[in-house]
Length: 247
Image (cartoon, rainbow, N blue to C red; front, side):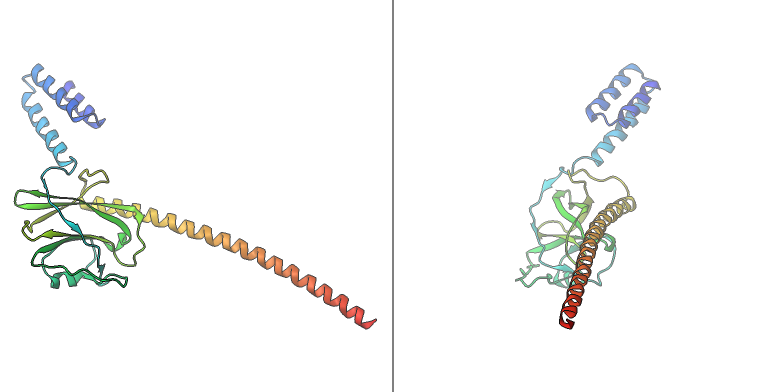
């Protein structure tokens, strides 16, 4: 049992997968009594590493980013994961871009759209596509969210890609870290974590704004004192001129 605890300690201290599995094999050789337990533990650890591996398994699928639109203000709140197959569905969530520019037309006979729209409480966070993989009879779309890096849009930020119509339209969505590692915590925890980061970023921006206002207030106060002194000088000069006129 001591040796089994050793494995768990190794796992808790984030040693490499190779090191952990080596320890497991050593215990299996030493103790037949714990062999069933070790086999189960090994399976669990392998499953854990597989679920948290960098999102690189599966066949890469080419895609084209499509930023030429903006999220409608009345779009449903929450994180929207969308597979859009026609213009009618597109128009339920997206409108034209906020700038005056030619908007490429999507040919839905040749392509469909995969999109993720951020919730209102993360509206201006950065979201970017990471990969699109073909696994079995479906696609896996991985994306990353950076709540600390903000955009200047006045609409909810999103990522959208165009995919060839010949690809499967069943899509699994996977948020990953900046280095592509799948996030294993629940969606609720991820949402709360992102909101904390987003609000922290917002607070920093507000602090900078307050600092700028305070500096401006000090500048205005200095100007006020300058003009008050200037008024006194002019008033003194006027009094002297009036006395000169009387004489």
